[in-house]
Image (cartoon, rainbow, N blue to C red; front, side, top):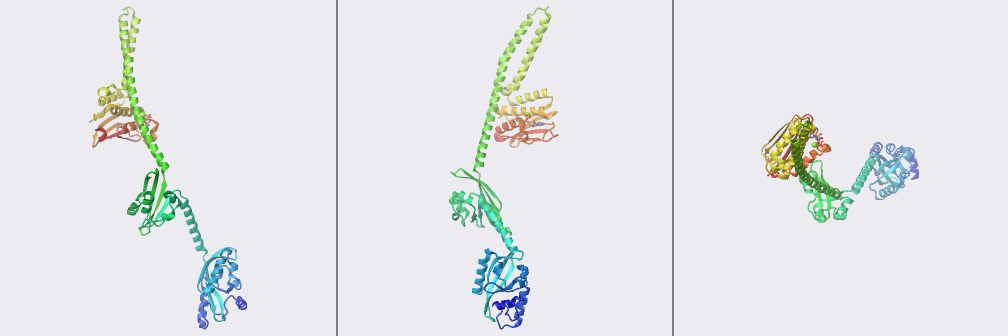
Amino acid sequence: MTESREKQGATGLNPDTDAAPSVPAGEPDEHQRLYRLLAENAREMVSRHTADLTFLYASPAAERVIGYPSAHLIGQRLDDLVHPDDLSSVLSTFALARDTREDSSTVFRCRAPDQRWRWCEVVCRGVLDQASGTEEIHATIRDVTRYKQIEQAIERVAKEWRGTFDSAQDAILMLDRRANVIRVNISTLRLLECDFRDLIGKPLAEVTRQRLKMDDPFHVRRVWSGSSQVRTDLELENKSIWLRSTVDPIMAENGRLEGAVVFIANITTEKQAEIRLLKTLDEVRELSSHLQTVREEERRSIAREVHDELGHTLTALKMDIAWLVKHIPDNDGEIRTRGAELTGMVDQTIASMRKIVSRLRPPVLDDLGLDAALEWLTSDFQRYSGVETEIALADLPNRFRGARASCIFRIVQEALTNVSKHAAASRVEIRGGVQGNSYRLVVQDDGKGFEFRSEAHRTGFGLLGIGERVRELEGTMEMHTSPGEGASLVITFPEAAIR
Ligand SMILES: Nc1ncnc2c1ncn2[C@@H]1O[C@H](COP(=O)(O)OP(=O)(O)O)[C@@H](O)[C@H]1O
Ligand SMILES: [Mg+2]
């Protein structure tokens, strides 16, 4: 055996006397020649080994596949080139091939001359050389480094993906095309308080019925009927837990639904914060509405007090001064002049007091109603601002009485104040009328307009206050304006709000 190996070692090729692998003795020479031709020219490396893996033959492809010229390999043992971690697998594969005389294969790392490891796949089979009566193992070896690299990359990605999947805070369930659960992560088990076995392979509907006492809480059926993402917020009964689920369909290339992924996030904290915020907002609105009422009341009482107290005193003062002036001797010119001046001052004071009182609380609003109060407001506005002011309120609903009338009055008052303060307008129109099912009130100026963004105009409280008042009356407010285009405040009250 050793001898014949040495003989062959000289060339690394089978001497003609040697039977070609797998070819039984007695076959024509032509077959042996063809077989060798095939082995010599194959892309894969072909080799023959003794039972202890010593190379008897290696085809020229050896140089390309494992890096050694075939002559170098003859007499060497394959296991000397195998990575220690793969050795036992290679040995058992060759042993199996020898014992069973059937194909046996494995993948192993082979040390190349540059000491680097190349991934190789070997397929081997035990063969009895009938000529010499010796057992051999014939093998084909190919370089699978490239495949191995791809496989390793896929494994790495899969591992990363599994890591993310398992460590995700959100519960994630994957469904097959019949909406059966095929994979879940740890968070799912925590959320549904169960084990993998309770979920895998079961229809999701059954799982949610059992675990959440709900039939289709995540609206998975809608995904199956519409094939697009469905998002749902739901509250778990008597657990005070809020969940947000997102179900994403998985589509096959032919456009058919392959399954779906369900993401479930616990949004209890956000939801509670949202609920608290909405409640606070409601409270703030109530408070603001209450403050408006209180303010209105206070204005009214200050107006009354100023009118009554100051008014009476001033009137008395005026009468007393008139009496005094009447009793000044005719020849005392200077005192008379002073007296006349004093009367004039008291008259002026009374006039200013009246003005203050009416601005605080236009008496017409209480006495004659909103229509008259707005007429008074606009003529007063025109007088002091110099802006031409027109008012045309058709069908002003007589429902706007009491507090509601005050609301409308203050809205128009603030709108006009803005026109005089910011618009540099020459004209402003206040129009109102029924339009369809609603009442529309418009305050439109021809001033310089402005860039209206609701959040950006929070510097002042005027528009905010208008908004609040409008909301109180169940109406909506819009501001139509842009720089250079004037401004138009449009308030709409639905029919229900004015009836
Ligand atoms: N009719 C208008 N013409 C031009 N700018 C306006 C008009 N009304 C409001 N504005 C702009 O909107 C801002 C916010 O108004 P507002 O909330 O009433 O607050 P304030 O009047 O106290 O500034 C004003 O500062 C002004 O820049
Ligand atoms: Mg203002």
